[in-house]
Image (cartoon, rainbow, N blue to C red):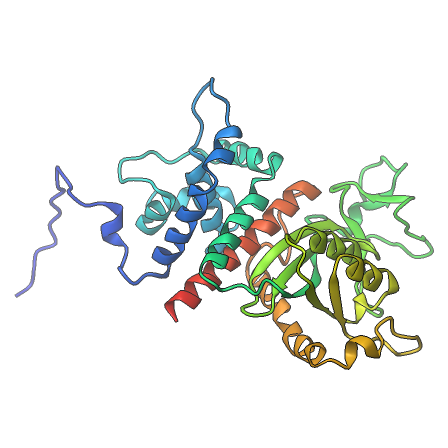
Length: 354
């Protein structure tokens, strides 16, 4: 029997947003991890807000919305706000009921800047790492370090001399015969972006460098940092992240041939860290000798070094780690840290499900 196509709107509804989410949905495990991390950050969140003035967006909801944007590869805050109007899954994850009004995209962006100024994304990463440590998913002794290029939201035509205040050319830029240096040229669109190439033979591009320190057990990101692109940025960021490791226990860190430098090896050993760096012996002498390579742990670290590429691959697959849509080192760094935090949440939830 054919049913009639008749609409009869209900006057009352007794459903909640949680009723629309399947019991085995992956976001349920991620939501519990996020709630536990936010619970440990209550003091930090309270300090970032004033006790007077007009109430803003709840910081817990704002953080969940930013994580949701990364998890589902939503391009902009405007699209995120639009989809939260009708997507019950998104409403439930953020913490909105069926009757709650959705924020304006401009208000959402202005509230997001508060967390960039207070470095809240780095503290969120620390809270998520603590959740992994409580579940015994981390190796507190063996780590890997690496960096990747993050393309800036700027065109090559905006990279001109510092004293050039004219309008940018309409056609493709012509750099023939022009030696471009960081002390004479700058990006007019994003002054923090630098022209850089990671290997010989590659094309130079305007970018930043994102650095991570991962554990060797499950490739979870335990620390991250974003810097301007330079030849010494990877070594400087690696030493900074190693110095932030708590405790006095000797650690090991695996790295590729780019870190086979005397400055990195000496700095790591001064920080009570054994550098398991791949030897770079083509046309030069390696900074790593037989005192390190003769041990079995060196080969084990070499075999585990490829796992550090996992968060980079995850963050660059339709996510802002491939090319950011923000400008400025602070904003790009906060976004990269948020991407690595989202990766940790997905990884921890998958390990728990397994």
